[in-house]
Structures are given as C-alpha cells and as structure tokens.
Length: 413
Image (cartoon, rainbow, N blue to C red; front, side, top):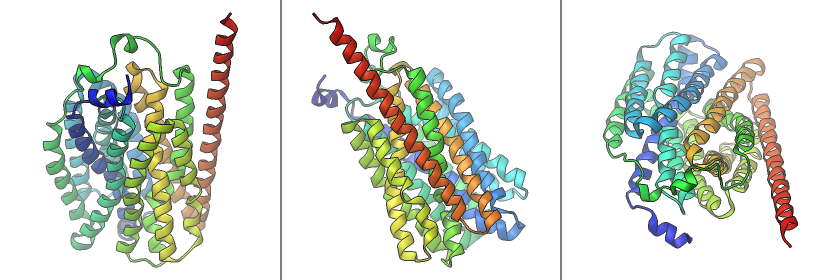
C-alpha cells in the first residue's frame, strides 16, 4: 500500500484519540515532575536530604514500570477505557493525598501509587492505542501524543510552583489533584478501540514478522538496555534543574521557568523526531536524539549565567524530547504487530527504572559533594553508554541484513 493510500485508509477519529492521549500524557508526566517543585519546601520544612526526596521520583518511576506491564496486558483484554478511568482516578487521588503526608515513607508510597495506579494506566495503553489508529503517520501521531508529556513536565511543575507560592505546598497538591480529576475524567469517555480497517491483516498478525526483519527476542532486550542508560542521563536535569537553579541564585519561579523552557522546547522536538522517524526509521532518529541530549547535560553545571542556562535548556529540551518518542517507535518497529503493546510497555518499563535510578543518583551525589557536578557527569557517562549500545545495534542490523542478502544471492541461479 502506498503512503498516500495508507493515509487515506486512516480514520479521522484517530486524531481525537491523539488529542486525548496528548492531554492525558501531559498530566501523567507532569505528576512525576511535581517532585522537583516539592524539593525545596520539603527540605526546608522537614530537613530531609535531597537524595531522600528524590526517592519519591524513583518510587514514581518504579510504580510506572511495574504497573505498565500489568495495565498494558489488562488493557489488551478489557479495553483501554476502563484501565484509563482507573488511572485518572488513581493519579488524581494520589496527588490530592500529598496534602496530608508528613513522613518520607508516606511521600514515597504516594508517588509509587501515582505511578503504578495512575500514570501506568495511561502511558502504555494510550500510546499503543494511538499507534493502532495510524499506519503511514504513526510516528507523527505518537510524536504528538508524547509531546504532550513534554509539555506537561514543564507546565504542571510551573503551575505547581505558582500554587505553592500562593497556597503553600499542602493546599497546592490538593488543588492539583482536584484539577487533574476534572480534566481527565470526561476525556476517558472519548476513547474507542481502533477500527478493524486500521489494523493489519490477520495473516500479518499471526506471524513474527517485524519492520526490522530481526529476531525481536534479541532486539527488544537490546533496546531496553539502551533505554536504561538513556533515561539515567535524561533524569538528572528533569528532576534537579529547578533546585540547581535556586542554588545558583535564581528565584523559585525563575528556576521553574528553566524546566518549563526545557519542556516547551521538547514539544517541538518530539514533533520533529516523530516526523523524522517516519522518514529515516526509529533507530537512526533515536541515535540522533540521544546524541543531542547527551552532549548538553554536563554543561548545566558549568555556568552561573541565567541566560546561558536558558540556552542550554532549549538545546537539551529539543534533544531529550525525541528520545522517548523514538524509543517507543523502535519498539513498535522491532516487534511483530501482535506484540506491539507488550514490546512498548517492556522497553518503557526498563526506561522508567533508569529514570528512577538517574533521579536518585543525582540527589545522592549532590548530598555527598554539595553541588551537582558529579551528578551530571554521571548522567553524561550514562548517555555515552547508551550511544555505544545503539551503535552496536546498528552494526548488528547491518551485519544481519548483509548476511541475508548474501544468502538470497547464493540461492539465485
């Protein structure tokens, strides 16, 4: 089927699914980003170390990782809408309940639940559903949906910081939780399964054929290993950029603006890399996004200029934006259609574990050294390891394709 024919075959309601997914992922990703604006208030009120507060994001990531596999599999059986409804209520209730927490274990437990019974119900099911509504433009569609996540990671912490300034952190969390429920709950009733016409033929579904023409039992773990180090790299700025900005003399709102700048830029980055993946493939686009992300991270700790920090925020945001989008597209390309939901959730699960580890190591090494240089250096090293793993995967793909071509040539008369 030609590209034009494939586009004509796509149902217009798919763009409604994209819109619902975009808003839902914006709030879901933003819920984890709330940890960054709670860092200073909790440190001042309770005297907790930043590594301990960062554990809340680690708990959120572990919850999203563990819950993603469960809810992704359940959504295949009962549909996306019931699972997404559970996630909307769970995430909203978890945020609101932060108002009453007063111990570190309570903070960690609530963020674990926000990830496991909230965001995990939305991320993989909605991303997989979005991909199933499209064929020729699935990269763009997933790029738009995940761009919502980038926007939410900037706007939700920024709004959270405003609410903390006006109401105090406890009432701010209650207000966020209520706002999440009011926005999310009606949207879930717009979700529909992809029409049969948008899905591949039964013959394609029944075979282990994928776009890479490689054994998915090899390539998917390989992708997951890359995702682990990639997400360690990206999380240091995501979670610690606001406290870093405050440490060098920014006002809390200006520091929150740094993260907002990262995420607003990331909206355009995810659209671009989704578009790019449709043209050059998910893996080359993922490598380029990872390279852009890794090349910037350490320089956040090498300046005290607000203007330079904002410039770095723009560069980092554009690069880091494409990583998650392209990683999901790679998982979709490397797996047969019948396993696309599982493949995306499995790779994302490893990525979430990396994000939890990256957040904690940044806080841990800050507490040891009283600055973020070592934390961000570790993140940069993890990014380099990710690039080496992806380069090795490129080599493996090329060698297997060359072997296949030689085998075909040998059978020809």
